[in-house]
Image (cartoon, rainbow, N blue to C red; front, side, top):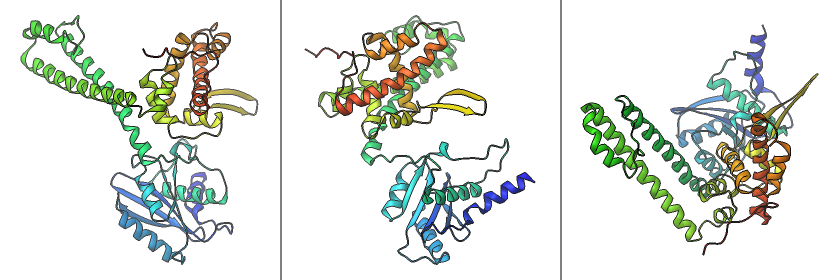
Length: 384
């Protein structure tokens, strides 16, 4: 019985009438790899559902016209829409805005869901749910998190370091694979696989390996060589941009001890270069470093950080926090950590390093925004 009531509520939610909703068309997109489901309503009539091929903008425009006619809306009536952030990125959002549609991109992790162990989930139900929440959003309720749109230039600027991260992972994968294949015959090279002495070692030992396995290792070596060449190309390109003064924020951030050009590049391109924060709480929320207390009834516990923000920047800041302790021991941040957590066990230090990462992120934001060098921190000596 409870399940039937739940399904009834889910299906009828978009049909709720509300005089606070202005005459307009509201649409949700459930985006798939091959097809999209478009759900539309004016808030007074039941939803209309349309299936279109993925990426077919002409079909989407046709659906908007049909939904307007069904709801008897004027041609100049506003159209509001939403979809979840995902693999389609921002192109659909920009196209909708060009068509005069008021679109928002929603953080999928912020959408409320039924907490039953088993719940019905289909594209139709998801589309209805998004439409119902869009109506609530335009009534003034805070129902989800809206993703901030980067400019096309800022979005494209993130490609370099993301590709670089994937290439370094591939490099490690190829190296480990070659070592594992050699281990099948108890060959454990004393040189770095793919390094400068690798060719000499291979010439002395390749005859000890069966022909098919030898061919597989040679193909792995070829892929490893290609990946290493591409890594060097990206590194050279970034060094040249820094030398030419095209990345002033990266250069400024890299002046601080404990922060290198690679880490500075990621922080600027993922976070500080295009995001604007009103206060430190917004920054912590974007990083996913906000606390999540649980205070209900007689239970009061801390559940840890939210982890709902930019994973790349959060992971990097935690790594930089360890480097900060080692290379900036006189800074106020390091001294705060030592007073609070250094005397504790391993678990306390792991908890403390996350807290330090949050404070470090705020300090770096203030440094880039207002030129405030973190208290007690030192800069790298100027190059001769």
